[in-house]
Image 1 (spheres, one colour):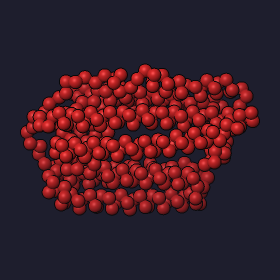
Image 2: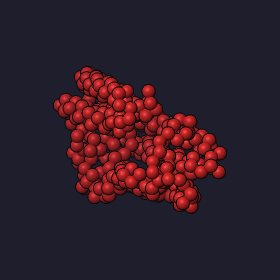
Image 3: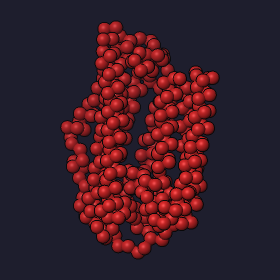
Image 4: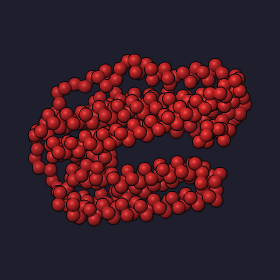
Length: 365
């Protein structure tokens, strides 16, 4: 069984667990994106949820069996193995949409409520620091400069894949795209994270008229935890990609091969740190929601105007009248884009750039 098979299986399993948990992360406040009564949530809602999860698991098993057969009989078709992720995600969305229609019939009309808005402005420097941003930028750019300096000495064949021991097991023809792909991706991702962080500063929080201060406190704690998670991911991804970028030099140039072990260990530690910290903050976010529920009785509130702008069972938010670029997800934890804001399409255009970068690099190898 190849390392690629195991890695993609883990990704698929994580996606399955996320899809199974998606409808219930906010309880009856947003069950399949619909507010229902506690009686429906504990009764008919449970039966609908069990059917949804059954079909998800059956689909997952079918896709993984097909992927295992492809990996066994056609091990050279690496991209075909990756296709399981792209099969499972749309299948999960289709099942979600179908079962959302069943839950929609039980939607509970929101009682007339009074809402409040926070008057406390968020300041960007409260959530980051200039030394941190300068350090992360320098770490992202440094591999570029090192590779530019050593580019003439890099041989005609360069490593593009490493096994678990850090030994190169995949090679390609030297080209600008192959040599600078990872450093370029690092800078690209830092730009994306920075844009998202700025966008999150504008997140609107709709506050209930009752328990307003407690609700605001927990929602701000959730936002702070999200930003800290984002910063940790920025650091670990940058360190990991910097190590992999420089490993091209350490693998192909004899005078630096003594550094291969250091880079391998650094990459492994960075990967483990990212998984650990991500897990910690996800648990932290769930705990904040749990404490919020106990303190205020609700984990999600919204005005009727905003509620009417959610589509596909709370998967998509499009409200041209809402100036916020990011809004709290109706489902799960975290935030999503408001597709009614024109700036959202600039973000999407930026995001699409990553696959194009990778495609360009591989077409020119």
